[in-house]
Length: 358
Image (cartoon, rainbow, N blue to C red; front, side, top):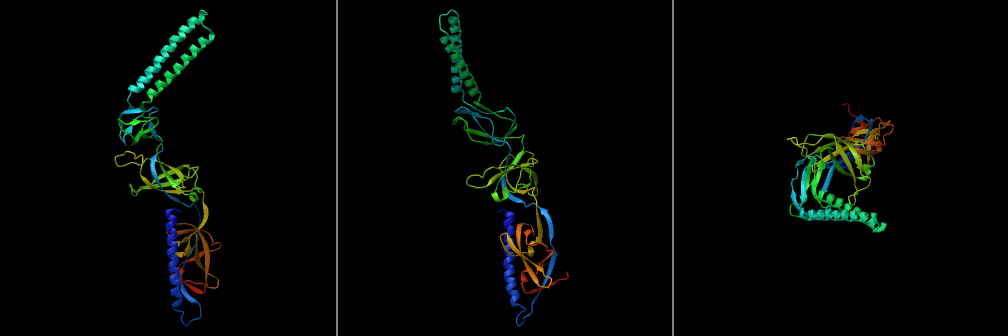
């Protein structure tokens, strides 16, 4: 249950306690020696019908849409790391490099092997043309040369991956290693966030709420770090499976603009966000004041109306959610136009409500 709903259920529970206490006081006050219906001053209000979407509240974390761990394809000793956390980089900028002696030696070995294979193939071609060697030996020399060429290509490629270049314009989020450190192939060295795809908020949503969401639903995002400001966004991705352990589904909200500090630099990662998601799917509800609810218990509560005979009539209602001082009711008020909003805690089945003029 989201935090807004929890606050609503607490409010209903408090009203329920007031109702029980007040009802007890009401029965003991003014009824001693009287067998007639007890009069209670009340005020009523109209029930409003509307098509609304139940908001989903969540907490998430701001991040770049594109966050990539960068690593060397080959292992070795880190020679240098040229960037710091939070630093903006341009596409193709060198970010880190390995010590080259070992890698250079492997490349030299592969090139030497290719040169030998070229010589062997040239010699075999001449001998085969003079019918000195068989076709099989010539084919073997050709195959050895092709293999040596592939090894040289691989060595050149690996030597190229001994340097990490920025895959695009963006920001260094984290630095996970230091010069002099020995790292294995594929070990993350830096975490990079691309600037081109904007920023997102990723939040974990419970299953009972995620089933109401769809890609494209509107979102409003706030940060404690920026009081009084709200960022608009849209749901761009909904996790297909629950996260192990947590049991929640990751929902990604793409912000319409970057979150920036006073100096104008975008904050790429780490801010905690409060997210309000508004599903596109709406449901028919009836709005009633929270003050009208009595004996609340989870999704169930009660309200009072004025019966045709002048007595109070209690209706059991089902609540969808609570929004501020209003409660959305999905069942129990069919055909009801007005409900008691003041004096409800003092009513019982044998009460005779008297509507106040104000």
